[in-house]
Length: 157
Ligand SMILES: [Fe+2]
Image (cartoon, rainbow, N blue to C red; front, side):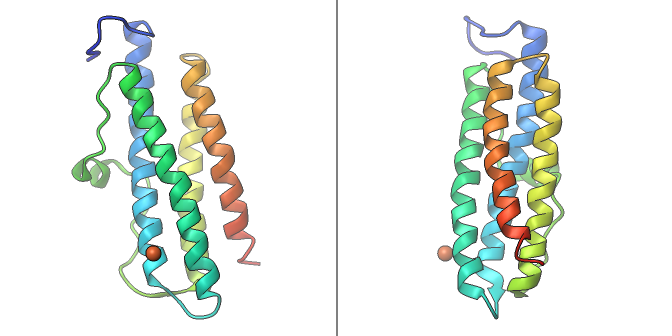
């Protein structure tokens, strides 16, 4: 499974780390895609604020997926960000293809951010015993996404 001669981690740990990073990679790619869908389909009051806010979040999510994928490569395991893998492996519920008010967009987006963050926290828990470097990467990423979750769901009140 590992393709480099000089492994950073022992093989058994490496496989477990790569597996959980792959799960997070798929969620992050899907999150960015679904947020773009929401960005295109938001309508009504507060359209502009939500439309623009979504692109800010997408930027961070895309950076995050890139970092996770490159961590896998660093560990010598090829990341799988192919569309079919994302479609089959994502933890996120599929968003309907329809226009949605800013109010309902905010809750659709908050739900998907929450699912993503829950997955990240599960991986952080697991990585604590396996690889502190991957753990640290996910911790800082999760802090940013949780802040986005706050700024999205605070608009529901
Ligand atoms: Fe746009």
